[in-house]
Image (cartoon, rainbow, N blue to C red; front, side):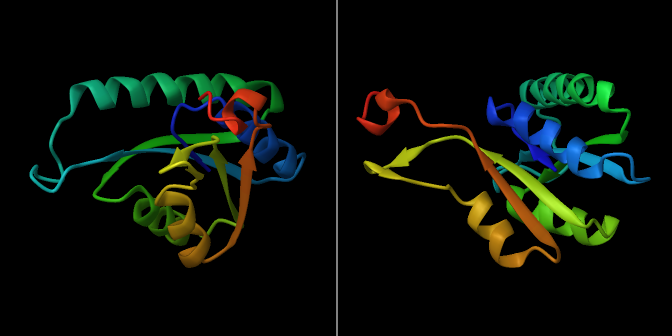
Length: 142
């Protein structure tokens, strides 16, 4: 499962934990730092790393009551979607769970770049979680 610090991440982590249930499965939570092409891939990006650590700790706390075998990891990549797909293939996961917020680009609903990439390239099932949209968001208020 991939997290970005959005409000939908909490529900997505809970869903992933519920799907694992009492099975002897593991939950891999990844936070991907996208590194600009102008920087070396292994550059230390202090603010992004701090946010990633904060988000991963929060997600581990959410998963804790479910008694899942949780592995949280921070990755750096040029593209988050590529890192998520590669990690899923390497770990041979059964499914990727992605949380998505309501976002617009040029006035239309947009999934961004990561979600479509994962949906088209994932070597496993993909579960997409989007929280309910507020009327303000639908009407253009944010």
